Structures are given as C-alpha cells and as structure tokens.
Length: 311
Image (cartoon, rainbow, N blue to C red; front, side):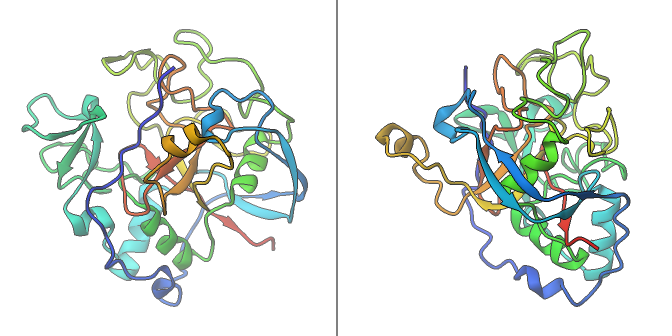
C-alpha cells in the first residue's frame, strides 16, 4: 500500500505576519453550530495500526479538559468574512501559487509543473482559496464548501481572529470517535466501498485516473454533508484533511522511521484524510491515521476546523 503524499512548498513564507496580529481586529465571526465535547479519559491511536511508520499506534489514553468544536470545517463563507475584516492575504496569494490535484483542472488548462514524487499534484500559478483550480478555471469557491488552499499559518491567523484555536491530536481523535471506542471510522468499523456503502467523501474508482463520484462528489463536498458522528460533527474523515495545532512527530528508535521522515522538521500534523483517499492507495481516512505538511504549504484538499473554550 502506497503512502499518501501531500507535497511541501519549495519556497518559504517567512514574512507571514504572526497570527496574534489579527486577534484584536475582528471577532465578528459567525461560526455556525458549535458542539460541546466532554472531557475525561480520551483515546488516541490504535492497536490496529496500518502505517506503523506514521506513528498510528499504540492505543493509549490521555486526560483532556472539555472543549467546544465546530460542527464543520471552516467554510469559504467564514474565511471570506475574515479576509474582508482584516485584509489578510494567504500564503498562496502572497507566494503566487498552490497545489491542485490534476484531475480537478479544466481540460484546456495550460501546462503546469508536476511534483516529482506525486505527478498528480500540479503547482498552479494563481490557485487560491477564491480560485480553487486556478485563474483559468471557472470553478470559484463555493461558500458552503471547506476553505482550501490555506496553510497552517493562515489557519492559525484565522483562529486568532475567530477566538478559537486548532485542536490537538487527542482532542481531534476524541471528537472524531463520537463516543465510540477503538474504531477505525467515526461511524464504527464498517469499511466504505465504491458502490453501496458511501458514508463519507473519499475516492471511488482507480486512483489517480478515475473518480466515479459514486458518493455524489468529485472534489470537495459541502462542509455539512453526509451523516454526522455521535457528537454531531460532520466529515471528520474524508472531504479535506484537517490541520491540528501540533508538530508532526513519530516516536520511534528505528532508523527506517527516521529516514522516512527526514526533512520534516517544522512540519505540522493533519488528520482525517480527504476526497483523494482510497483503500488501494491512501488508506488514511481513518481516525488514527496521520499526515504531515509544512506550515506554509497549501493544497486543494487541506482545510481545518476550530475548537474553543467551554462556555
């Protein structure tokens, strides 16, 4: 089984303003539904890891405090309100490009630079959260879909403005389980297939050449779609990867693990998989699965949701 690849930028966005610079400007956010999540002994990881090299196991317990979490990922409509209030420019806008999955590009799209290790990713000049497949595409950001082409830097700036923060890994997993125990998915252990059981927005077909869209979507789905989990949270797996507040770290003494993750200093942890995941290729639409992305990278399948202090 091959590894999921979310390429990192080759350039740096070191001039990005600190997230705290936006904390005092706005706060006029309308987050929609926010769910109360109980604290206590929370599960993290699994005793059934599929990619041990990613640090999926073992299953362990950590004590966490209660928190509140967005029922959905942050939408384009919410992000637009942030931009209107602050004048914020994302890393993709300032650097001039972002990564788009080739299958989403228009057929008459101009030639673009492929990522060597994953040629289905193309660096598209002018691809931003507003123009999700680049300026030559008619596909503008749908207000109800997750905001994409935002980096970890952008997400933390939004969080400061909105009065929230990105979740920790244990908070994210605890919320994703929806009250269930060591299950693979937010609904339990039943495996999605390509034809009949379609509980989330992932790939159906043969990656990367054909997505049948049997689940109703080829690309992102609305942030509030499919059935929510036991806590009332939507799309905790599939649709878009979700950023966390934590660095990507794998605790292992094996040299093979160190080699696999060499060059990822400063990378951030993301969870949940995306619409590009399929069991035959990127089997990471599981609660315990983990992925890494540099803080200034942005793609067409990476988003975020926030957590807040309990009221």
